[in-house]
Each structure stands twice: as structure tokens, then as C-alpha cells.
Figure 1 (cartoon, rainbow, N blue to C red):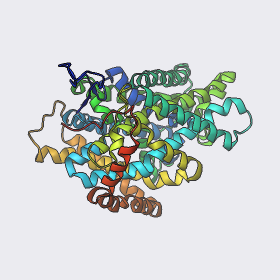
Figure 2 (spheres, one colour):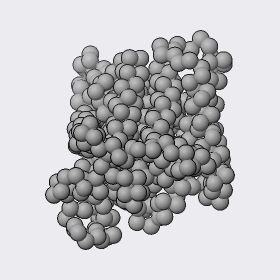
Figure 3 (cartoon, rainbow, N blue to C red):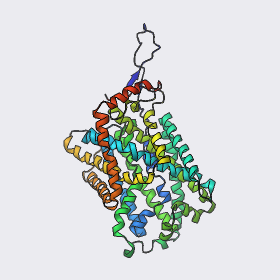
Figure 4 (cartoon, one colour):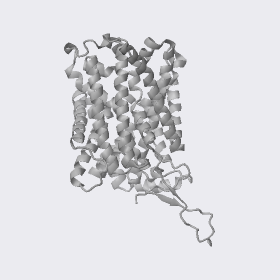
Length: 481
């Protein structure tokens, strides 16, 4: 899965002329610590710091909300373990796209990649970037609101910085991700430690009648689980960069399991700290729970909380872009995107075109699009295709029984998780049929796109035209061997 470059300066009489000198390929630079930082740093975004009240609102009680947080963590762990098996059995980057391609063929895989490229990933990046822009400016404009134009300018700067970082160096991208992950864990520790300290001192009044039957909303529990599963989303990102992981048979399962345990403990203890300091009514009334927590407990130090939230958002953007660019890289290598996206910078060994392809789409959505409506249309499709990928694991157990499986999970784990994914999809169909229908319609545009770009010569024509635009700093596309 590599190509070589030759030194054009060698003389014709030199017997070594034209000999391969070095491979132009993505290097294996993702260690266990970097893998943990990618997963943990991407899962822990702005949500746990800003608004966990959705779960409390739909569960109806403090105790039930904590049960939902733990249950969603266990279900997410089931999905992560399923992906650990897929990642060690199919040692290719690309995540969902690659697993669906291996199990169900190019048409279904293309639809997944198409929806990701035109809507889900640009809108997701734009939303995280907007949160970064708002909270990085919050200390400057306190106590006034932050102007929208300032937010969008700061958002653009943050997004550009992430794109530049991922284009220049895999090592520095990973190092900064490690730093940002430790910053997030420090922020969570700042919340957990004083909260638990007060709990041990006897501040338990907010936990009295935590499971009061009259307040539990059984009808809202599916929506609470829906919110919780979104809070844990991100455990699959290491599978997007499998080819860059050192010793993937060991590193992928270990990084996934360690990361999920860390996140589950952090999320549960953070909520315990919130409830120790704030009543359920105060938490429901707050739009930024971590800020309210800091104001009640830390006084002037609360000014620092928005900065930590901004760093958390920057880490999520960085980890997300690092992983998703590899999916476009692999799709190009498979012939389902223009060839230029599988080119690698010959000195920096980064998939530069695959990194920057989302930049113009994300900026367009940021300034012109209705981002939140688009996310509502598309969010359920993510769980649909993740469920399809995990079903592919079960399907390949029977169709490809001889496939090497260094890490193998009991069959009930992918079965329970895939059923959970499809349950969330059907919940979306029931609760919001109009927006869900629009999302399906947008995803179905992948069918004509597949036949136009893959089955007809338009893609070949585009690739031929791109040959004239090749940058000399890019090596030829990496090909399968």
C-alpha cells in the first residue's frame, strides 16, 4: 500500500539510477497514548461542559439520569468492542466506509461516504467550530453577549488552524491532541474534585429521593438514551486511521477499551459533581452547566471555564478532522473519489488534499447554511450506517469464517449494539418524520451520484483534468497492493 519515488538527478551511467529511494506513504505514528488521546479527545467535546440537562429533562430524576449515563456508556463500549474486532480483522483505514465496503460492497459504502462528505462532516465540524468561536471570546466580552460576526471570524480562524495543523504534520497533530486531551481531563478534574469533596462532607440533599417514581418519565427515556449516545459518540475515530497505528492488533483494542473506561468514569463523576452543587431545577435552568457550576463554587475562577471549553472544542475538531480525512483518502484509493484525494505530501507524509477537501464546504455551511437543521436531518443516518457496519461484522462471521480475527467479541455484543442503533433510527422516524424524511431524501442522492461518478466516465474525465493541476509537492496516489 505504498509507492516509491525516484531521484531524477541520478546520472544515466549510475547503476543505482532510478532505484527506489523512499516510500511516500502514511507513516505508523499513532502509538497507544496517541490512540487514547484521539478517542478520548474527540468524545469529550463541549457537551459535558455545557448542557447535560437533556438527559435529566427526559429521564425525570437525578438517579435515573445517572443510570442513563452509565447505560449509554456500556452500550457505547459494546459498539467500541465491535469496532475493535473490525479494526483488527480489516487492517485498513476508513472506519465505517471500509467495513461497509468489505461486507456489503461499493454501492452501500459510497452512499455512506457521500452523505458524510456533503453534509454530516462539514455540518458537524461547523457546529464544533462555532462552539469554539463562542467560548474562546466569552471572557473578552463578559458580561455582554458575543457578536455573531466575531464568533464566525473566530470560528474561521480556529477551523483554518486545525486544517493547517493536519496538513503539515501527523506527529504534531497527535502531540497537540495529547495536550488538548490532558487539558480536558484537567478541566473535568477541576469539576469532579471539589464536587466529590462536598459530597463526602455531607452535601447530599440533591440526591434525596433520587429515584422518586412520580418524577420518572418512562416515555422520555428513549430520548434520554438518544442524547446520551450522542454524548459518547467518537469511540470509532481510531478505526479511521488503522494503517497509521503501531501494532494495530494490540493497540486498537487497548486504546478503545481504556478510552471508554476513562470517558464513562469522567462523565458519571462529572454529573455527580454537578448534582452535588446544583439542584435538578438549577441544572435545568442553566444553558451552560459547567459555567453555572463554576460561578456557584469558584467565584472569579469561573472566567477560565469558557477557555477550557474552547480548548475542548478545538481538540474535538482536531481529532475529528484527523480521522475523517483518512476516510476520503481511502475512498479515493478505492476509485470512488477523484484520484487527487489519495495523494500524499512527499516530505510531510500527510494526505493533504483529503485534509483540505472539507474546508470550503464547511465554510460555506458556516456562513450560509442552517447548520442545526442539517444536523437534525442527518444525525440519525450516522447511527443507521454504524448499525449497518456492525451488522456487517455478524454477516462476515458467517460469510468469511476464515478471516483472521486477533480480537473477537461474543456475538451478543454486536447484536445488542446494532439493535440499539436501529432503535434510535426508528425513534427518529417516529418523533420527527418530516426532518427524518428530508434526511433520507438527501442520502438517496447518493444513488444517482454513484452511477454518474462511478459507472460512467465523468469521474475518469475529472481525474484526467486534475492531472494538469497536480502540485509537485504531492506524490502519486497510494495504490492497493
